[in-house]
Length: 322
Image (cartoon, rainbow, N blue to C red):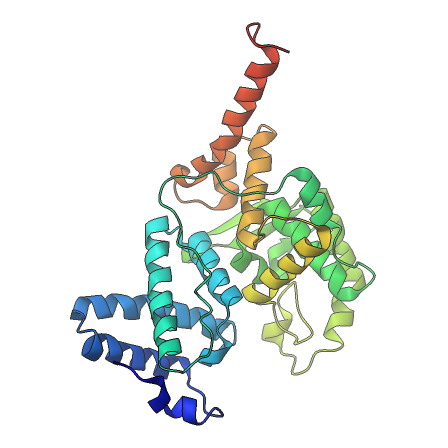
């Protein structure tokens, strides 16, 4: 039975533990105290190493810095970039939950950041998306009188215009953007690049950002390098925005816009596809723009077609009451 009172980290609050040390402690707990099978421990370790790699990318190196927002962002990213099933995603969350519960139980962290995150329910569900009014409210939320606000408006416009993954958005280099043709190259998973039209509104706001804001943001940056300067959307650190940073911005702007739905970059991707289908786009064309490997991944958006058919039936069938 573990006793957090005997933890050096409880007795000496100034101490901290890095992620890999915390994982090794958890593995020992699984083997010695819970006597789990070797393959089960390997499965836990595989899931948590993926999570740790994400945390390192987000500059989270210590266990006390793991937050509920970071865990949610990680799960969104896994669902989006790796097309995980809900069952696989649920297993990932179980691994994180078990690790966090262990850390709390040993007194290594005070609060469990995973306890309010629900397991996904199995079965096909329609994607959550914004309606067109909500999109306009979101787009108008950034303060475009500031350089950062102009950048954020351009980023949200581009994400809604292209449906790209957030990892693709933050990694766009200036050379990937062709304003003359109105297209951008998205670097997808597995080195699969695709060219996507950006539309006139995103084109307009990207031009404003480049002309009025980018240089101003860079003027406050330190330790600039050519490698960092290549990115289209940059922060005052001089490098690209992180997934977590953009996710937090979206949440802030959704709150400002009065949007009640839980918003994430992945849901803007849903919104892009849903609105295209609603306005008559071909499913195969949407598949190519989203970068889906298989049409089955795109078919979740046919819920729009079902709703349209139902509405047409209600409005035009002679046996329906008007």
